[in-house]
Length: 211
Ligand code: ADP
Ligand code: MG
Image (tube, rainbow, N blue to C red):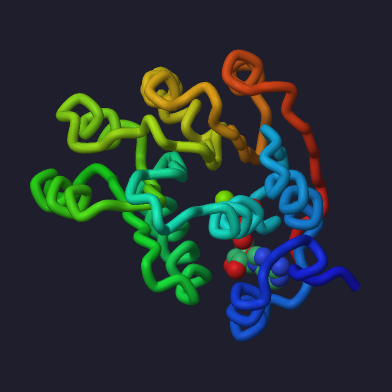
């Protein structure tokens, strides 16, 4: 049996996974984590419920540098619910790292409050596209130090009409970033986005659901 430490995840995070009853990585996690730890661009197509969230959250936590003040990891998600869910997963597994700041930015919440929170600094930002663009226009967030960019549930973002916003956001990050794309389905618009913004990505497809 493969465990999370075999994939390159540190003991402190593994202990929290264990405490939450997660002992064996799902197929998508087994394939994603080692490649993402190497810094490669990555596309994963896998059904809902296969464990895609931890596939990118764990490598991001491994690679983040909490001694640098800037936003280094940006996760773009289609809905407030999903953004909050990812935020809570990040915080749960980042607990060993007391200096790490994880912040959710989404529509429907008070902009001034978010501006204050951003002023306090964040290493990992999980955002919905519209509100993030709003902050970029106000210059209340800077993305030039983002080294890891995730597009989560990319097909949902397409169906909700967010791809234009997503592209505008990607244009404001460094071309040196690692880009990761997760989606349940892979419509041609998503493939084309990946071709334009990713560097020879490893591309995996998983059919099996999590146990
Ligand atoms: P997806 O994004 O692919 O729809 P999620 O990342 O939301 O899936 O995970 C679906 C469920 O599976 C969550 O409840 C999560 O806690 C659980 N899960 C994730 N990884 C594992 C694992 N390795 N072992 C058991 N359950 C897991
Ligand atoms: Mg998901």
